Image (cartoon, rainbow, N blue to C red):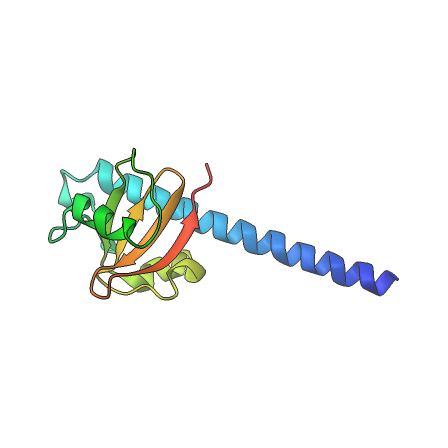
Length: 130
């Protein structure tokens, strides 16, 4: 009986630790995107790992993503391009494990989406916890 409780406790600790690490990673994404968009007028302050997209309009991105997954229709998301995946993987390896350069990060109030325009695929989705 006590070995059952020990293994049950280990699983709980592992789950809580994994949840906390993922939460910290998503919060890191929010901070990066918030800084990126608040400093969008000054390119010298823009992080090298993420920049605002030039080639794809936000409305076009939202239209493409909404064909793949349900997104809030009453909300304008923030959209940024991934430039340096390795830097982002250091912040949250699990969330960015399949991300590539030029993928888009689409940030809604309740979730963040990694979208790859070149293949028209959603790479990853995570909840945003405030």
